[in-house]
Length: 600
Image 1 (tube, rainbow, N blue to C red):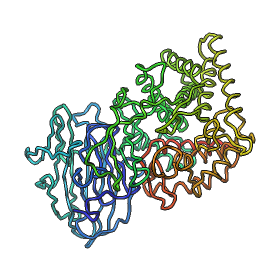
Image 2 (image 1 turned 60 degrees about the vertical axis):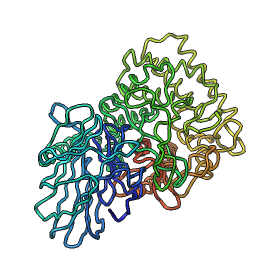
Image 3 (image 1 turned 135 degrees about the horizontal axis):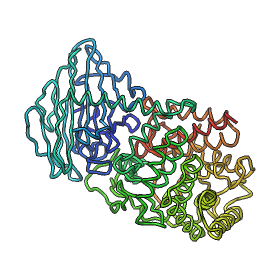
Image 4 (image 1 turned 60 degrees about the horizontal axis):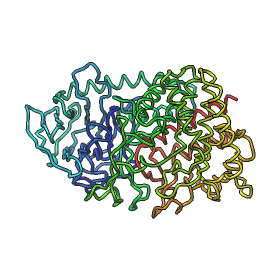
C-alpha cells in the first residue's frame, strides 16, 4: 500500500497530534499508525506501529513518488504539517485533533486532516482501514448520507470527506487534489454515547479555533526561559499527554516500542506515574503555568486516595490500579520486537523514590505561594510518615528493575528529600513538634547512612546501591537536593564519574551499566538522564558545558522537537515509547537550570 510495505517507520519520524484525551502518531508518509479510543489507554483502532499491517492504518498522502521537504508544527500550536515534492507540484498535509470541546455539540474526539496542492494537480492515496483491539477486528461499516460509519460494540467512528469520496474500509483509493481544491477529512468518535457528526468544513474551522486556543496558551509561557522554542514544544507535548477529564499525565501514548529493537524490553507506558506528575509540577511552575502545576497536584491527591499513606508506583487514567501485565498474542511488534504488552507489572513494585518527587513538588507549590489545602497536606504528611518508617527497606528503584530489590542510593536520597521537604512545608502548617522532629531525625539518619554505605572513596562517587561499585545516572539529581552542597567534592565526583563511566558520547548517558538489570540484550542512552546531566552541570557552575550539551541534545529531537525514552548512540535513532513525558519534563527543567545559573 505504501513505500514502507505495510511496516511502521522510524520512531523519530512520527509526529504527535492529540486532544488531551487520546493521541495519534503520524508517519512521514502521512500514515496514522497508532491511535487508541476513547482514551490513551483504550483499544487501538490504528495499530500498525506494533500490530503489523493487519493492525489498522489511515494514510493520506502522495500516491506516487515523493520526497518530504518539510515537517513542522505550526508555531505555538499542536497542528502538524508535512510537505512533499511530488510529480507535478507540492502537496501539504495538515493534521490535528480538536482539544477544546466543552460547551459545544462536538464529539469528544475529532480528528481533522486536510491535503492541499500547489503547482498542479497531484494524485493522492486515501487508505482507511481501522481495526479494533487485540483481535484487530474489522468494523461493521455502513453509509449514512455522505459519512461512512464504522462500529464495534460500544465504539463508533465516522469518516466524512469534502469533496465527497466513497470510502470503503480496507480499500485504498486514488484521488486527484488540485490547487485551490483541498481534500478535507473529518473523523468523529463516540464510545458509549451518541455519535455526533461534524461536516469536514466545520471540522476544519474547529481545528483553526483550536489552534488559536493553543496560541493563547503558549503566549502565557514566560519569555525569559532559554531555548524557549524547545521549551514551548515540550510543554505543549506534556499538555497533550495529560488526560483532561482527570488531569492524569500519561508517561507516553504508546505501548511496546522497544528499548532494544528485536528484544523483549517492550513496556506499556499509557499510564500515569506520580513521579512524572511531580516533575511536571516543577516544569510548569518554572514557566508561569501555575494552573497546570496545581492540576497535577490535584490529580495526585485524588488518584492516591485509596492507597494512602502508601504511594502507588503508577495508576491508570482514572486513579485505579492498571490491569495486570499481559502479552498480546499474534502481534509482531515494532521491528519484530516481542512480546507486545498491555498493562504494566511495575505497578506491584515497591519504589521509595516517588515519595521524594511528590513531596518536592508540594514544597515547590508552597514556596511559589500556593499553600496546600488541608487534605493535600494530610496526604503529604502521611507520605512523610511512611517514608520515615520504610526508608531502611530495599526497593526496586527508579528504573523498575525486574529482579531482586536492593538498597538503591538514589531511593535513599529521594527519601531524604521527602522528609526534608515535609519539614519545610511544616513551617507553614500547624504540625506537631514531635512529628516534625521525627522527620528531621530520620532525614539526618538517611544522610549519615548514605554517606557511610553509598559512597565509594576510591571512585570518589556515590554508587548505584549499597555494596556495589556500579554507577546510576539517576544520581545526577544530587546537586538539586540539598543533602550536599552543589560544589562539594562528592557531588562533583559523582557527576564526573557518571560522565566517564556511563557516558555514551556527547550529551548521551546510559542509565546504568549494560547487563546489570536481569534482562537479555541492551538498551539505548536515556534521554532524561542527558537533561539531568545538563541540569547538574548548570547547578554546579559549569554553564558553558551545559549549554554545549543542550545544543547537541536539540539535534536528537528532529524537526518536530519530540523525544522518545532513549536514543541509540550508534545511530541517533529513537528507542522506546514515544513521545516520552519524562524526557520533555527533564528538557524544561534543564532549561530552567540554565536560566537560574545565568542569573546568578
